[in-house]
Image (tube, rainbow, N blue to C red):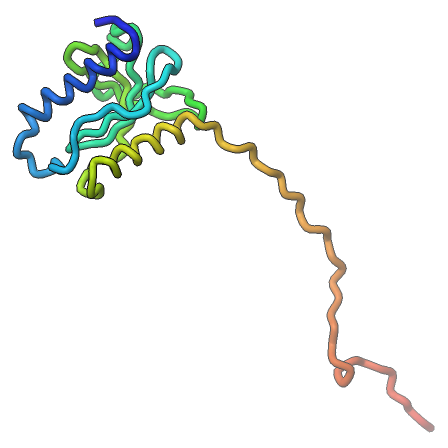
Length: 165
């Protein structure tokens, strides 16, 4: 399947909804307060980067514009992708109709979310962080060297003894 971002992301959501309606029904790790939703997808490199919320995971995904882009990768292979936030190791995963995607698991215990809106907010935050370059490091000069001065109370100061003959 080829197409623009909207078409590819819609296919991604449809594929995960099929999984939710078949393979994940009744699975205890699923959070029933959550639904499948794509969050924050935007053009990046060879495709589109965003996140997917499901009742069983929250992942960042890189969906290729060309489904054959990572066809040589096997499920579980690692691919380091330079993002604005730095280099990140993605894991290859095949999804019916979409080819091989690159995935970063963000949250696997979805019971941490009490609502779908909370999970979507976390997904949006994560994508924004991945797509934001870190602020340049500010160099703090070392403090100036100080001369060692020891201050002693007057009674402990050494003074020459007055030795009278």
